[in-house]
Amino acid sequence: MNQKLKVVHYVNQFFGGIGGEEKAGIEPRLTSGAVGPGTILQQAMKDWGEVRATIICGDNYFVEHSENATKEILSLLLPLSADLFIAGPAFNAGRYGLTCGELCRIIQQKLGITSVTGMFPDQPAVDAYRKDLFIVATDSIARNMPETMIKMASLALKLHKRENIGSPQDEGYIARGVRKNVIQGTYASERAIDMLLAKTKGLAFKSELVLPKFETVHRAEPVKNLTAATIALVTTGGVVPKGNPDKLKSHVSTSYGRYPIEGPDTLAPGKYEANHGGFYTAYVNQSPNRMLPVDVLSDMEKEGTIGKLYPFFFTTAGTGTYPEMAEKMAQGILGELKGAGADGVILTST
Image 1: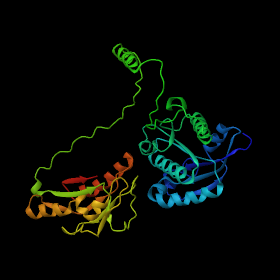
Image 2: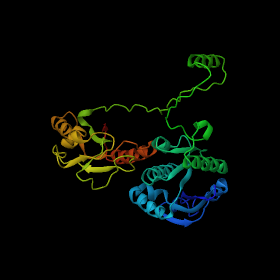
Image 3: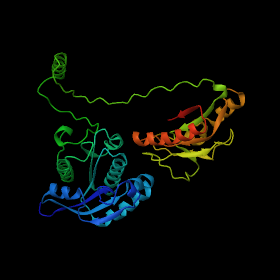
Image 4: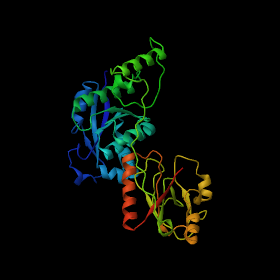
């Protein structure tokens, strides 16, 4: 390659050498050349690429101000005319992974710049972005950094040159849920029998189908006395005041809203709307009570079926939200409800 590709590398405040959690709120900044792990990336690219600049941003700043942070980072990136954008690797750091995934997705879609990142396969952000991006599999912590950077650089170059990309096993990226037909030397029935025989003999075998893994969620204890219970409403349907004044995201949510319930007419048409990128919202906009049944629960409170309707409801958009962030939001909502003595929650969704 006669002319080196121009590469921009993204790292968080820790890998940027600025500091740890005490510096997680720093705004995006641009540094010339390679910084921290970027020097290893430069070595991995050898003579075909050059890390022209490094963009650094605090983990908390991006998660808490994702829209503004993205705009700021794009404004730093655009004048550089980058050929490649490399983020991380983020390993198993949740906020760092969210940032790397979101930036790669937006930069690739809006600017057409080839983007690659790296994460630990069990990292929560993987599920949110693996279908949109090529994510190189890493260890849970920052070991084997040179090997990881070599894989990221190699994959980025292939993508940029539009070369054929091999399987996840061959290239080192996390499976994206894409199935391709491959001609094999034996029938599927023969391979299935071979795997079954290997399994019965206790021998190693590898399935051709990757099954999803789900965590076990234990059932909560039922409310003992509903007629004396305080019941709260929570929704992942994105019901927000008209105009979405708090600018909640319609997908890949990082925050939730908390709004007062002021009687059965709280969600009268025209006052609230659905801010959600995963379903047709017109019917909810016509009558928000279809998603968040404040009217019905107000009647149940009046009738004595429940003791009391909690005076606020909580809302976010569930689509694309990665599990770690969903758990963080749930803990925040739970903290208030437990402190206020709520006895149960009705969670409505799409």
